[in-house]
Length: 176
Image (cartoon, rainbow, N blue to C red; front, side):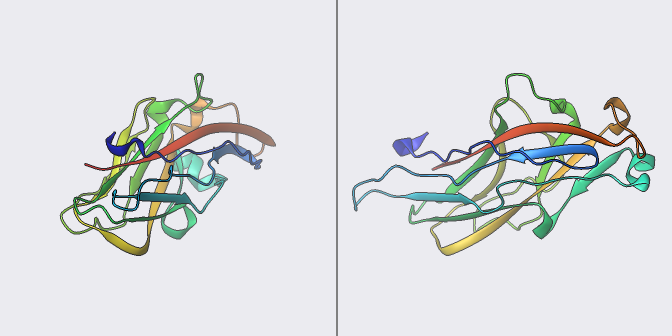
């Protein structure tokens, strides 16, 4: 990771009816650098997301939040080679199986960059989400979509009351 710049996320919890998935996130930070060095900035604008499945979601066997209802990341960089956003699940024993927890972004990539535009399972190691190949200013928003599949695996049903599940995501920005 170039320059040792990282963005961290803290854990926050949410409760929901039926199947609950709370994504614990927090404002990310970047260590100060000398004025001549490139800087990367990431701030998690959506500290928690709650997914509440409907009866239709149980029929489809997944629930999701997309676009502005998902996780908003606010970013910028003065690095001439751009930046990449990585995401991982930091839980040692995640409550939602990592293979059932999917992420993507429909935010177009920055100039010379790319984006994970199809759902892919989250991992305990970094998964590429989005990038730009040039400086990015002023602030720019990247939205992360979340989908939980295989709802039948989780101890809940549309009429069973409340079940709470929580996974913690960590977003990291790096210079390519």
